[in-house]
Length: 444
Image 1 (cartoon, rainbow, N blue to C red):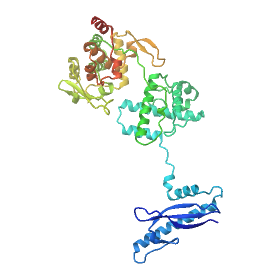
Image 2 (image 1 turned 90 degrees about the horizontal axis):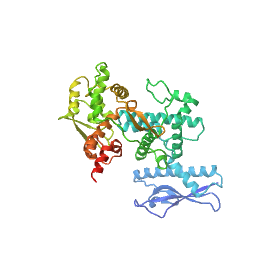
Image 3 (image 1 turned 135 degrees about the vertical axis):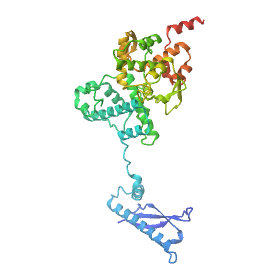
Image 4 (image 1 turned 135 degrees about the horizontal axis):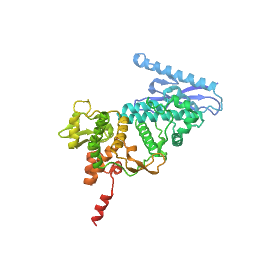
């Protein structure tokens, strides 16, 4: 049977106290000295006994408490020696067991942060644009579908914040690329977690996805993980070793000329008043060049001394600079035309209906020429009628492209469009056309 003898360390700390050491006699040759973690003034310890003063009742009370703790530790060690096999008992084993006994919180496993809760917290902490917020929710639903799919197929993937790996991200990539086939195989998965929650989207079947779509999705996912690491929510970052699709590829930017813009502006759409309103908004959009998310937020308060002033929502956090665009005479006329008709500057509808209206406007106006674009799914070049692929972003490209043709100064154009100097995104909008090339050659 094990016995315990109390000893006092020869070392004295800064408070003038020494640690009580417990010599545990288990067997011949096995008498480890275990630190109790309790300290006492050497004068109050003699032959293993704690000497309590009679006059100082405060100190006496402290020593009684110390003795109670010491007895509890001794009893724990004796019980441990009784319940543990001789082969397992060692100084290291007893020391670790006692530390767990004295500091249980230290050894409690912290619950792993939930990926979905962390994503909700990320969105709560980041005032993103409405469009970006919806894109993050699309990412969240895709991850939930992937988690269920991985479990059903026994892929060995744990879609957890602390456990996701770069290999899992590769599997997630394959899942996203093959969701059409997966939908055919597991339609109930898409009934439970639909691709889109918009009521007008009756089909639950995912659309084909290209490299640019995946690149955007994974850049968002990477930003979320970087934030989680910075906030101390997790130490895991699967993107450190991820070599998947992380860069977007774009073809030569296409836009309409100033002449085509004016043709649209002057086209008679009196037989379709609703379409005429969206045509006017598109023309105004072409004349100020902001993103559609910023266009929707504009009010009469943004009109200051003959110019539109706003802070771009996309760069509000990193670069909250005021963008000031002097108003073209056509833009002034349009503001006056719709003054007081809406709480916003112009009677804007939803982004999707606006995009649909732009396609119809192009068709009605006869702007149907072919343009060369990259197929977002295959990545191959193809020729498409511009009216079939026109959207709100063509207004921004029209603003940038036509301005650059006139002034050829990326810094000046960037100041009007909100692109930072040297922006890679700006280079996509800047069309180096034949006229500019000829002017450069004439300089030789």
